[in-house]
Length: 82
Image 1 (spheres, rainbow, N blue to C red):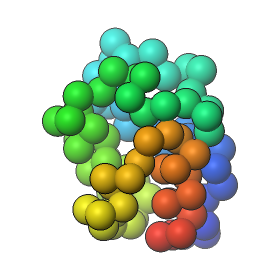
Image 2: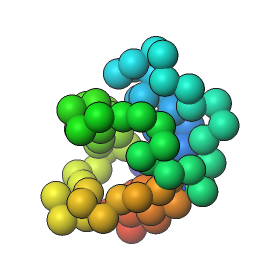
Image 3: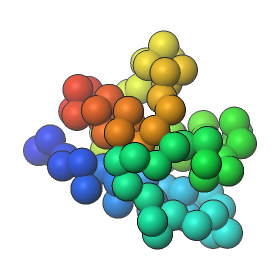
Image 4: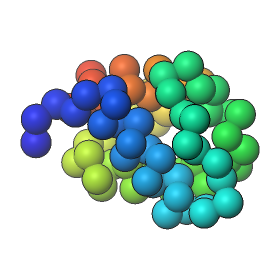
């Protein structure tokens, strides 16, 4: 798979969140969005991460997951791992 663009990563993230919980509003998510602001609890976050890993065919190291605060952090991490 070619390295995904930031926009593609954000779209996959939105799809993944919707798979976990349809009620979470992700339409306005962009690179500046705080992950905490989305209202995902820790279990939901891990479910989303699992879906992202599957869809993007990557593995997130635990130490990197602990540092994710925004969508910008997530897109940078995916770019580095892809």
